[in-house]
Amino acid sequence: MIKNQTISKILVSEDEVRNTVARMGAEITAHYGQLDKELMVIGLLRGSFIFMADLVRQIKIPLMIDFLTLSSYGDGTVSTGDVKVVMDLNSSIEDRDVLLVEDIVDTGRTFSKVIRMMRNRNPRSLKVCTFLNKPEARIAEIDIDFCGVDIPNEFAVGYGLDYAQNYRNLPYVGVLQLD
Ligand code: IMP
Ligand code: MG
Image (cartoon, rainbow, N blue to C red):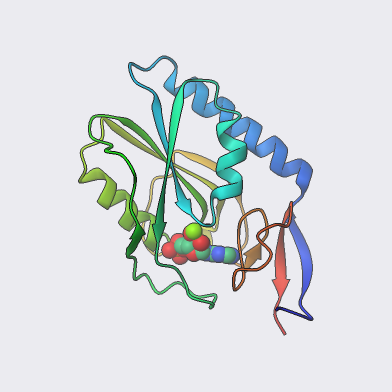
């Protein structure tokens, strides 16, 4: 059980979460228009589960969802850049239009490796989308096609993001005061 830690600052309020997801859903809907086959929306677990659930309801074209689980930080707050697939997709993405969904792009190491991995499976197209972006922390360059909110280089929790598996259920994004 985590105790005695507080949210020192709100980075993305509930209202801003709602508006951002609606804006992104509209952008994605407009970008794809009519597709031959359903769009494949792939969420990276566990962080993206809440954003993914909200986002797909704002995408107004036929779609399928799948999830990929990668090895993570452990209980720390620093990315090691060592990415392994813990649970793979259920379906093939070959010749499909794929949208990858992340909770946050920090150093970019995780997402850049996943993007490379997914490209090797020969999708028809591959676009990437993140709810949060920390541009100051970037080490691996990534072209983000659909971006939610840029945040400062601080450790964020809530709206799916965790600290030691806690705080994912906060309906907003805040900075955790670690003391
Ligand atoms: P990256 O490889 O450094 O871009 O970070 C990859 C993963 O680290 C993200 O998908 C998140 O799960 C996690 N992460 C990065 N920054 C934060 C944060 O501020 N709070 C919580 N998790 C984070
Ligand atoms: Mg993640």
